[in-house]
Image (cartoon, rainbow, N blue to C red; front, side, top):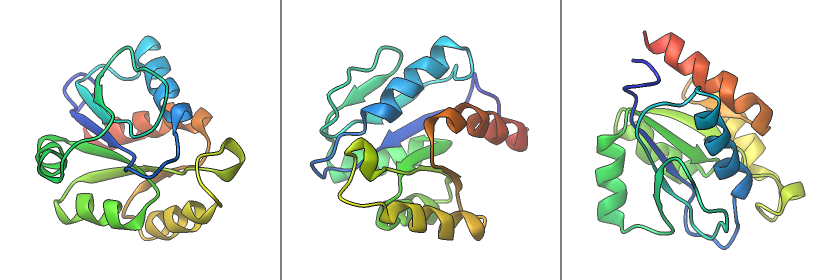
Length: 144
């Protein structure tokens, strides 16, 4: 699978924490040509408006399951329940950690969640946005 044909579903849940940092970076990756395929994002309470991919603030549980089924790759924040839903559907997961220092969560517990999933090979984990592009490229390379 390459960057042009990969269908990506990005979802960050419904809690009252923005994740603008992720959505800004995804637009940058489209502008840099790293991302080229179709993407849909559920952006929650984030205030950034995506430019290069479709999005909704919130989606129903039914639409969530439809998007999981549709996607080749699911990009998630570090919530273990939502990661498990994607893994249970047989999807590859890229887990991006929400960090307290950016007001994305109340603490940094997602670091431990993502470390645990990544150490067992269940997800590709990203802790800082400067690593996101290289992680996508690794995914595309590994899937060829």
